[in-house]
Image (cartoon, rainbow, N blue to C red; front, top):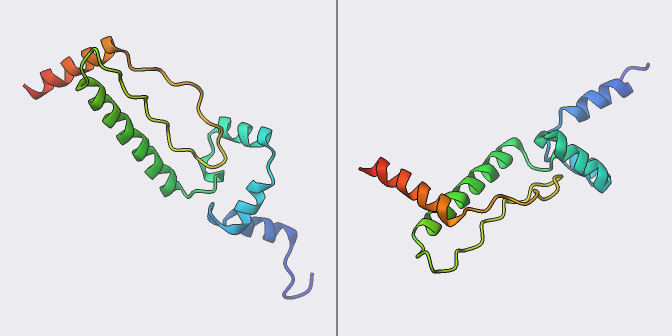
Length: 121
């Protein structure tokens, strides 16, 4: 190899260490088929998504806050009133939508409210 030339191995190592949100990784992800994206989502490798790890953590915080808001709304809604729909999690790049989520029932909301009320006493 001549001076100034780069080996394929060196190029691979450089690409592998680029940040997840880099244009190169984004272009590589955009070439994935839906089946490959689903397999990647199942393996749980957010570092291969187009968001950085910090973005992934912020999305998780957003989801938890949405859940708390939903629970508080449900426990403060009269029993005869229609409850709001549960919040959808923030979509993550490179991940298929989550399967159906468990619904908060009136009974479980009442139990949760009682637990919260006992903690405030």
